[in-house]
Amino acid sequence: MAADFTVPQRCQVLGLPVDVCSNVLAAAIALKASGGGQLVTLNAEMTMAALGQAALGAAIRAAELIIPDGAGVVWALRRQGIRVKRSPGIELADKLLAHSATNGWRVALVGSSAAVLDLLSKQLPQKYPGLQLVLTIHGYQPLDLWPQLEQQILQMQPDLVLVALGIPRQETWIQRLHQGQPGLWMGVGGSFDVWSGQKKRAPNWMGTLQIEWLYRLVQEPSRWRRMLALPQFAFAVLSGNPPKPARQKQAAGKTKE
Image (cartoon, rainbow, N blue to C red; front, side):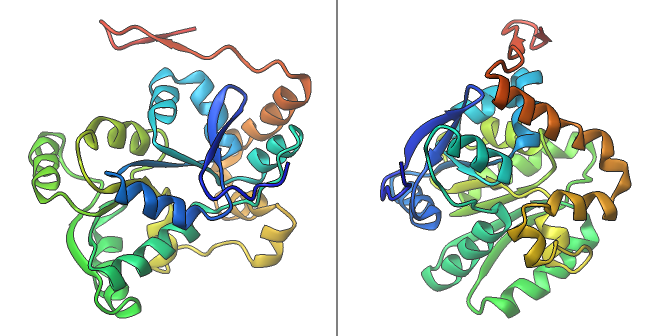
């Protein structure tokens, strides 16, 4: 089945939802027009993390739009007969910034370091003339400041909130905070570091060969334990026997297997 849907069609990979559509930018803009919501960029590593972490799994399942970011998710969909292009989250976020600049959207950036956000505050308006950066909050705030900062975001009601707090924190934080808000809220992982020039993205040819994970591993060898999720994901898809998702105790807020 070719992914020529103009309206996202919800499918599943290892029990997690993923939306298939021909134009993820149009789908995101349509979500904003319909009242806003959370946008998740799903890859194999996040999928396996969500099966082991109940709060992350709940946040993904509650999201209004989940796009296939990673090559593993695209491969898993193709095994179901669903042909879809990979939609890297960093590219979608970049396009949403361009759309924001030309359509008067008010943008907030949350996460990464103070130094990176300082660079982006200068670089992004130069790259996208007219971009309205109404709020930037770095991710290393004292814990007692977060409630006040969160209220500030909610009162501003930005049209686009890009969050670089890492997985799973960015997804669970967005899921908790975006309820009743009119904007798009999207976790962007390490995109701020790439945009600011602090890190480099894998060359295009590695993306074509679907080995961007290898480039990230060379840049950050400490990620090797996280990369073990990739063969685990492949085995789960091939065997049709994914790990049993963790469940969450509502009262205590704890997880159990």
